[in-house]
Image (cartoon, rainbow over the protein chains, first blue to last red):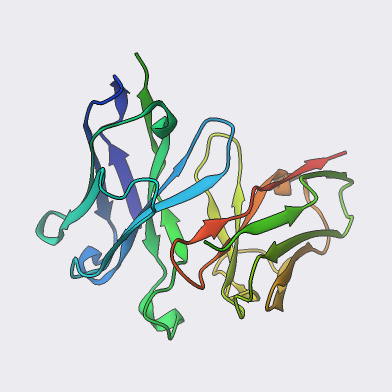
Length: 126
Length: 107
């Protein structure tokens, strides 16, 4: 079964740090680009970051640029999101989401997410 | 950033009804428009990509159309399991952005 499983969420004080992980299984992780998307409680979806299959290029939303770092370890079939300088407004469910297979699009970046994890909750509060 | 605006924000319809959700982009995005379905407590699910391509495994009662700035998602015959929130998302340029969502309820 194709699957993404996030972990690492929890409760953290403003200004603190947290590292999220996303474990992939059921597909050849090293050939897919992956993204982080979050959803604040009761709110809509916000794309945060993209990492290509080879770890370059990488893109961030302005809301997290300079504070969050995306990375991956293809040998471990794992994706990471290092979150520093956390703020109350970072409180959300964080999803990792796989790009659709390359054969389905002709442009360099698909921006289209076909497999999502179940999400991990991050709460930033004093 | 490209702003995505959906309408309506919510709707209530009966089983078997034809339902249409509209999404408008703040600038032309060609056909780089995706639709997702999200049920409470669950992750989003890709329904349509490149405006009108049906994702594998998605029922054929779902269809998408549009190009440029105006797009629609249509459910031809609403089923009870279609009760969910639907999001459009532009994949034209980063940062990829989502609409605010349309909540579909069954009467």
